[in-house]
Image 1 (cartoon, helix red, strand yellow):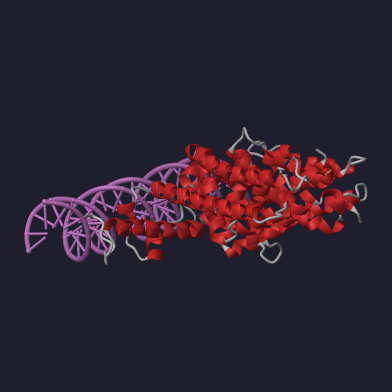
Image 2: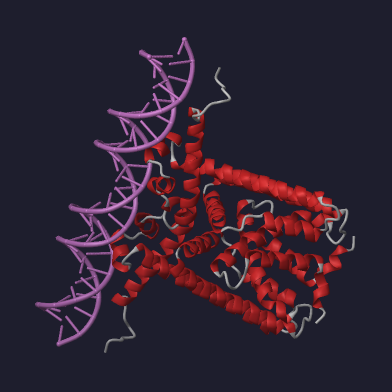
Length: 211
Length: 211
DNA sequence: CCAACTCAATACATATTTGTATCGAAATGC
DNA sequence: GCATTTCGATACAAATATGTATTGAGTTGG
């Protein structure tokens, strides 16, 4: 039989998959730190203690690795968001505030992740073939947000259904911009601050104008 | 005399300055299209019909050119914004809506400019020495926005003075994010749409919740 | 247990890219 | 007008990165 329960050594396919993952890990770091063009095979391999042989054995070209990493990263983000929204919606008495807070908290705020997805974005804008892929993935994220917001509508009527798509995009946009500002000037703004402020504006609205 | 009014040929300093500017123009295009690392001397020079000799004669290194271009770009943006806010404030009966519209309209929405400043941003985040420069320039822009908003406060009490810094940052953040989304999916969102939406949220506020 | 095969490490060749050095042309100042 | 200087183009050399070829270790399957 090919599958033995008491196997002490990892199978070849497993080690191969592990090698692939390790290289993707290294690429994630290297791309974030030095950018796509700036990162070299040596950069990537050094970080995870592999040789360029493993690199070239696992990926035919730099672009192929890029796409593989891209898909892995986006899928991870998507599952994170799905979990977060699901748990936020499952808790009873969840309001828009709660959901948005949960969403914000679940979104990755770490530097490397931001740098990487920003790099992805630029790459996508410069390579039309990839732009559609990127847009499709981002569309899924938007749908997740919209869906969760729609569910919340039942309990919180301050959000107008018609505006959902734009609100979702606004949230995404603010997240992008605030992440950048937060990383550039950590002492001036923290990442979630602007998003919270946006939530205040959306929900409390003109009520803040009472001076 | 060194300055003759009827000079038919451009002086040497002028042509030199022109060459510098042309190279910066080429670099602006090349960086936007292929990124900082991706752009080569050949790329840059081809676009403006100069040789690499002119490049190396004008700039000691790629970084030096980068900083020069960076400063030129930011200064241009700043003067554009100053003009726009000045004219918006000079017209009588200007409201926050008017100002924000003028600001949005004056902001550069073209693809190349966005790609370039995004590239600058990433570069700055990766190179701490440059981050402070970048932050300083961005701070000036924020001050411009804040100042104009403060002036408008006299006529439009819906904005709370305390929130000015955050509002300015919010505007900047939304601009960043919406530019990206607009470039990625031109048919789904237009660049200024989200900003207008944000303005609606800020000024009309909770009034939109009447369904 | 052995032969065939797979994967990863090392070595190599090719292709770019950068920076320097050289050279010609054009302008500057006397 | 002419010697000098400066700028920009071409040629050259060095460095770096990618992808391929080769080799050796370890695994798979009969």
